[in-house]
Image 1 (cartoon, rainbow, N blue to C red):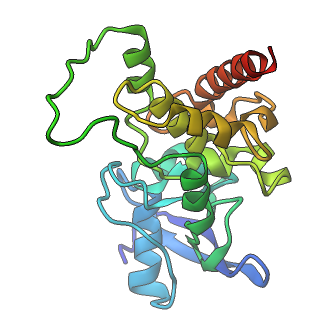
Image 2: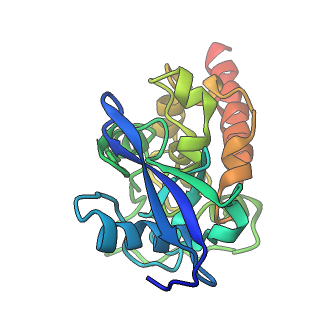
Length: 242
């Protein structure tokens, strides 16, 4: 440790959601240091038993997402100096998900809901059919492309208070994926998507608080996608009721 480095006071969650506590560490503060750098320093030099998850370190995979001072963030893209409060920072696993151990959240419920919302692409033609041309500036194609950069990091899921209060709610990422496919001309089961997102736990559970859009690191807009699903499911309901 550099004797001249100013120490950071870091509180890190240890254990699971059911049984755990915050453990205090002193970490040397370095220039251009990210929150992931801090977690890695603790695991390398202070406590090798600390569990956490990361891969790319450049904001491409989303696997390093954690709660930092109570807010969901990509830790690899969050500089410590931007989140420090009196030289202190608190790091915890993502909210609204089970905790496997320490900072590693169990992503299974998140992906189960992604599948339940109809997130798997259903082809509308076979590989033997000619490729249909798609106009990239068509209104529906623009809607489909708007959420295509979602990497399923679960930041929006952790930020969502509706998820926190309703375990059945599909969540922003799953519903945004559903909206993407609903607007994809090459998707072969649009009716299935509307059925999946209009039932219990679907888009009409959203309270439009907007935390999903505020915290998305890729600047996507799940709230608008969910609003689109609300419109389309309502139209579908009234068409069937005629």
